[in-house]
Length: 197
Image 1 (cartoon, rainbow, N blue to C red):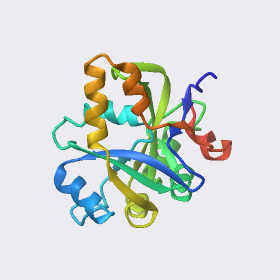
Image 2: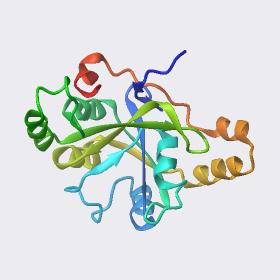
Image 3: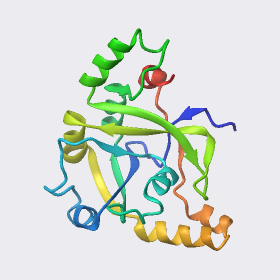
Image 4: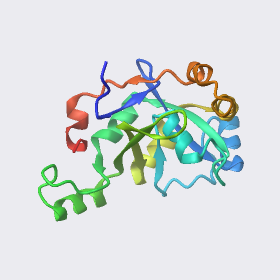
């Protein structure tokens, strides 16, 4: 089955979707221990969540980048994720999708969430032809994410290290078997029409 050029692929259940983030241990380890983000996690700052595990590996360089050593799998409600999509704006202006640049800028300023479509990655973190969604949350969306939508927070750093070691050793089939089983997320057209260039 051919991948849509822009699609949301994620580990999801009937009621939740798993997204990934990476933090320094003082935030990540505390969040896992308490099952919620600590007070040092800034709710008024833009936070980016990634449904794609391999895109998170690309962004954090397999959890080795400074300040991104603890890789988290954050299970959130689908109702919350869908709310964010409904209230999101594309992070860049697209002629034809937005009436004009000024309208897009006003929408972006008001929107509590923003969307980027970035190239999906393979096990070597090389870009693929299709794109995956990155969802930026700020203001109301960021607070809801931390305080209402979060169902569980897991430390997937050991899994990250295991998959990375297999990739380094050229054992790609074994690495692939350990990847989260991401599938197309059933976001209807009403959720994505304003976000697909």
